[in-house]
Amino acid sequence: MPLTEPYDDHLPQEDPVARDGAGNPDDNVVTDPSGASAPTTPDDGAGVEPEPTLPEAVRQRIVTLTAAVLPTLPADEVPVPLRRVAKFAPNRRARLGAPAIAAQLTADPLFRQRVTARVLADAGDLGAAVVEGTAPAAADPVEVAALAYLARPRGWRELIDASGAAVRAEADSAVVAELVREAEQRATRAEHDRAVARVEAEKLRDELARVREELGQLREESRQLARTLRETQARERRATELLATERGRAARASADVDAELRRARARLAEAEAAAGVARASAKEARSVDDARLWLLLETIGQAAVGLRRELALDPVDKLPADFVADAFAEQPGSAPASPAARARDTDDPARLDQLLALPRAHLVVDGYNVTKRGFGEMSLEQQRKRLITGLGGIAAQTGDEVTVVFDGAERMHGLPPAPRGVRVLFSRKGETADELIRRLVRAEPAGRPVVVVSSDREVADGVRRHGAYPLGADSLLRRLARS
Image (cartoon, rainbow, N blue to C red; front, top):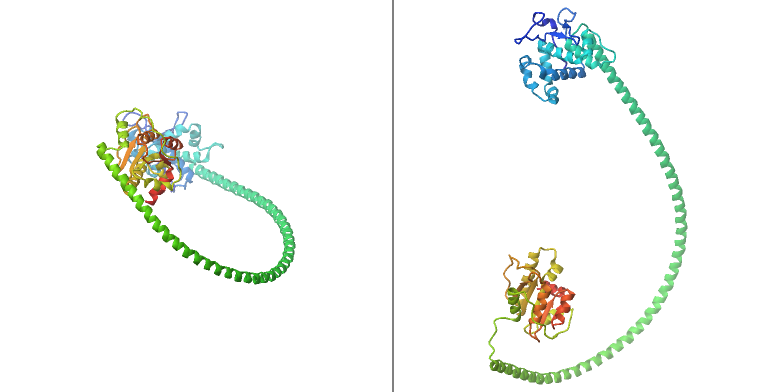
């Protein structure tokens, strides 16, 4: 909204030089930059005239000038509505306090004169020229109009009107310049579009020529395909005639095959009769062999019982692997020397079930070698738990001794209880699981089947030299999956 204010002659009459309680001159008198006192003169018009409509730029400049000098006024000269605004930061004072400043300038002429005195002092020569009713040609019209509104010299309305006309002329010039720029841009775009259209037209002509050339090639290919089709139809007729001839030959050959099949069936019946007689004879012979074998085994068993009684051997509480585990937990020394080799290497996974079916077999598993190959995406704790649980099932099914060895400087905490028949060992600091596996194999007596599951070639070669059966990790993983 436009800033409006009553004329200066509405102010109360005061002495030519009024002073406040501190003895300082009052701001009712405007001082120009030269130091001469210039009282603000009222407008020439008789009576109160309506305030001119200020351009938006002039109104904002008036508010900005007032907000800039507001903190410089003494506290008792700042109107009550603007005391809070005076405490604002400089960048917020004109923006947030604009309505209150505009209203106070309109309603309080004395406040406006105090503001005008400081604004004119800051304006310098431009302020002095505005007070005299003139404006330099090079001066900013917005600044001139703002100072004229605050100072109200003679002819201030004309200065504001002239400034408004200048602002509007600048706005019109800016609009015209913008229209000219837009027109130039449209002309540039039109020229560019014409160039693009020419290029596209050239491309379309080239594409049309290429399509016509391809059409000629396709017509030639169509004629060649028609000739090929006719030749193919002729070959098909000849092939049909040959097929009929071959069918006749096949019918005769089928009759011959049927006759031969009947003769073969007759010979098969005779062979089956002879095989039945042979099976009966073999069954009788096998019964005799079974009786002899049973008697031999019974004799060996009785001899073993007598030998055990003669040697006074009591049942043992520990197996060889238990002694290795105890010695491994108490002292870091090396295991005894290895016995002679007892078995040959085999990597066939199908042999795992056969080896586990041997009496008193001992299954030794390289733990992390198997788990990282089978379920390496799990954490180490989950890998150990899954492998130990699966080995517990194998121990329960086969009744064999099962030992699983993991790398580790010390025993891991948080392990689940080992299932019945499964022994869990961790290598000591300074020794690997491979060395512990070889010690377990060396501790077994000669003749006992020991199966070592590991895909590590060094482990396989090491246990093979001591008579164990090395198998790959895949054989155990498939065995666990089947369980």
